[in-house]
Length: 190
Image 1 (cartoon, rainbow, N blue to C red):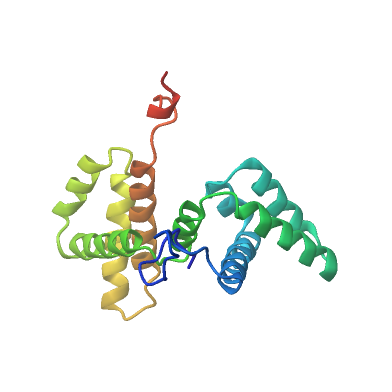
Image 2 (cartoon, helix red, strand yellow; image 1 turned 30 degrees about the vertical axis):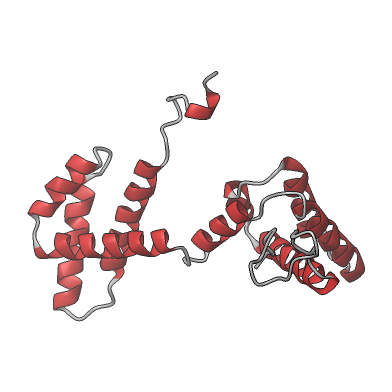
């Protein structure tokens, strides 16, 4: 965890100002940022594009991914850590948590989609609700997946269609969460 500017447990100096973090704390913070950089380097190219970071950091991470020599990579990772000291690591950590399935919102979303999948299997009328919610949904595909999943369950076969139904629902949900490309975003308006 990155050290906060002021910790209530730290002693204050004579003037009531908080003492600066110790050298050990600064080193722990730097190592934490460097570890975060290691996680960035381990991401796939597609995942890396989704991480909010300055272009200089993105370039340094891409460069580190290319390096194979141990010492060169170590120096590059130190450079990545140095660049990370000048940015807010929270958005990056939040995106990494999403990739790792650790964010509470992502877990809740997964559970919601699992419940929806169960509802689809229990009642075919739920398919109509899905099509109303996501107009781009392919009703026929969903119906086929439902039928196949029920058949697989009945015959004790591996749940291929069951999993595919979840993937389709997840893709629909992700597509709905992303803003349409033709609509201007709030930060583009001046």
